[in-house]
Amino acid sequence: MSVYTLNLRVFWLLVSCIFGVLLLLHHSVLLETEERSDGCSDQGNESISLIKYVFAFALCYFFIRYCSSQPGQTKHAVHVAGKPSGPTRELLEEHFERYARLSPHVLGHSKAHVAKLVSELVRVGRADIIPESSLAFRGDFVQIGSSYEEHKVGSPDCFDILVPLRLPRGLKLEPRSYAEKCGGAPLVTLETPRKEEWPKRHKAFTDTYLHSDGSPGVYRLNPDSVMRWFYCASQRCLSAVRYPFEQRCLLSLSLIEGQRVQLHLTPRSDYVCCHISMGVRLIPALPLGDSAFLVASPGARRSEDLWTIYFPKQEQKLLGWLKSKLPASSCHLKCLQLLKEVRDLGGQTLDQPAGAKWKGVLSSYVLKTAWLRLLLSTPSEAWEDRHLLDRIEDLLRFLKDGLQTRSLRHLLLGGDKKLLPDSVTLPKICKETVPSNLWAEFSVETLDLVTARLSYSWTHLPRLIRLGRPQRTTLGRGVHCKHIDAE
Image (tube, rainbow, N blue to C red; front, side):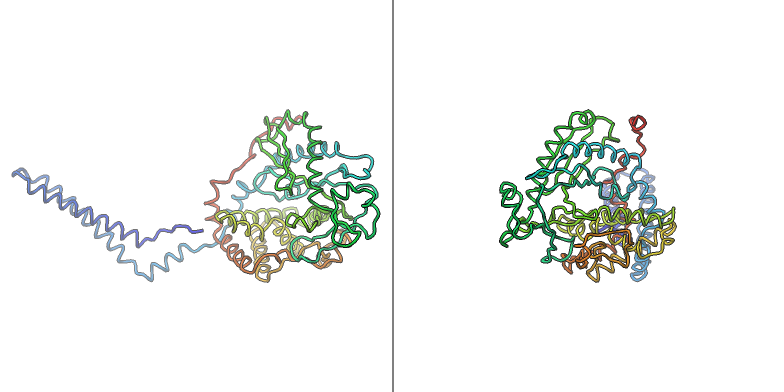
């Protein structure tokens, strides 16, 4: 991204040239006037001569200003004046309050509205008796993501909900690590035990949801089939609960790219604060044990039947444990929120391919992983609010060091015993798996470019904030919802 800076030497030279041209034009007009003169008074000529002297004086003044600027002195002066010094604490606080911080009222009311809708939806889809040859909702849901971990920025318009599923009665699936891919989230397959008789007895379910992995008598659960079933089941449940909610907002459900079920809420009135149109991503999940879940891997090929592991309960428990150790005036959440702002502002001028790589390398989960690692390895008193600027710089330095070494280890995969407290329990398959490098899938060139742009974004953050402000909103700030007192 290029930003224009005024070159004073060129400016004064241009002004001198303009005045010179005006003086020449004035002189030529004066000559024509003298040729047509019929002997009248010279009073007009005297005033014109005065104007000519003023023009000449101005021309000499601007030319002297230009010549008095020596090349070496000018270069040095411009360099010092335009040298980026990074953001100040006052600038960060102002930007956080106006553009990053969510309104607690709007966020709380939006979460309550989403929770009420989703709880009714999964209640309708719950099966009291485990089905013999079909999937079903377990009847509960898990709220995940930044909106529920208190570090979301911008607007509370997007929520992630895990919807646990029940497998058919009698079907046993064993998780196995998928070692062909390194990096990214941990990947596993769900396979039936060898020579299992259940798939043969329930051929309809096997043909719809299970794929053979090439080994005789071994089948894998297919994520795409589960997603299609989940979308159709969610449509039926939404139809059953739609009427009471559509007095407040319009509801619609869509399957995006065959990999994501999105519930859209468009408000009819001011019941949902500030008329925020919200999107709720419903994620079908299979319990893995120890409060971990398996969800369909978004980047896997259809033939691979891969699932990735989510640790929502472990991460929430870890955040609660850290919050109890940190001081009351801790800046740890604000630090992560401002880091997300640095990422978003730094990538706002990139084209689509470059922006996708930028967001991929510095995804929200990557930033949260680096943030948690720094939190766990830094004394709690260092996170007092007065150290905000120092902690952001530490976090940026931690990210740049990791980018230069091409490595950022997954915090929970492999069970980092040196950092994690004993209260965080993990499934056996996660403890036995080697830690995953979240940047292993990216090339060296991409990581180098992200490193350079991350440094540039922080150093030039005041300028990026000025450029990004017209596109940013303060949605939901200072608006009182008349319905909140009635609930």
